[in-house]
Image (cartoon, rainbow, N blue to C red; front, side):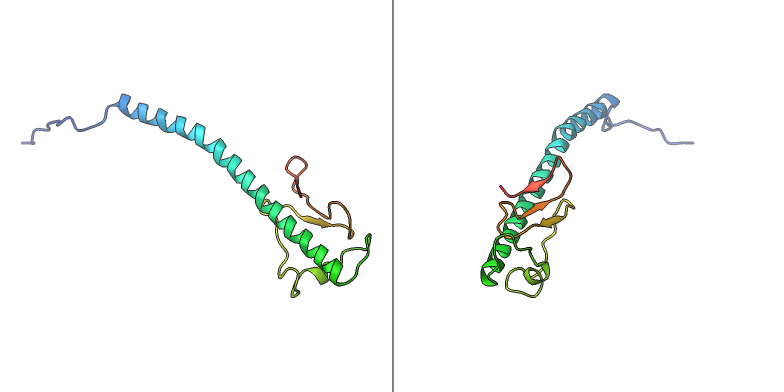
Length: 121
């Protein structure tokens, strides 16, 4: 003879589970766009800091090596085992840095897309 199965009422109903799923969905709909925006903003700020560091290193290099305005930047002398920058900074968003001549108003810029380009402020 089989034992009698009794319900104690401790289970969740379908309506309760659906309400929880809807609440989680609403929270995700609010949080995910903000997380993506925060990521883009933090990448832009980190890239701007890299650009400031590169800009300062190029200016210091130009002063110490007595380079004139319009001289091309010699990347091998600025980056590496020098007193200017130990390693080449990398854009956290995956862009690349372009180096221009000494004395240009904007000597470095990040080529991360057309709409998300990072530049020195």
